[in-house]
Image (cartoon, rainbow, N blue to C red; front, side, top):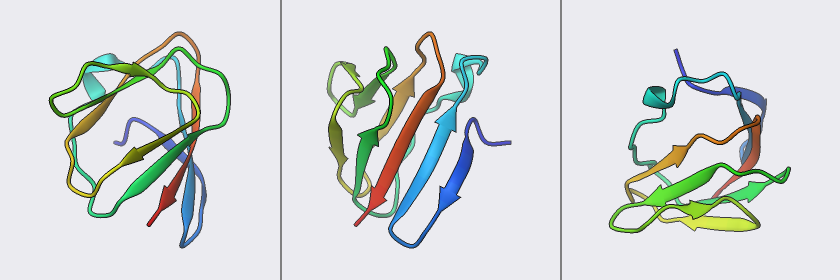
Length: 86
């Protein structure tokens, strides 16, 4: 089972929600097969950590290059993002 729910999927983007009830252990390090720009749709205290970097707050737009290891770090409320695929 995936740690998120895809609310809308198109060829160019995905609207994805992570709930506040998720077990943080489910938010594993992973890589994606395409470049992605993550757009944060609601203010949040969730964080993202890219390989060899310290975690940063999810805000604005964040670019994740293809095959770069990364993970999401759980915050207090639900997380709603738009994932733009390149």
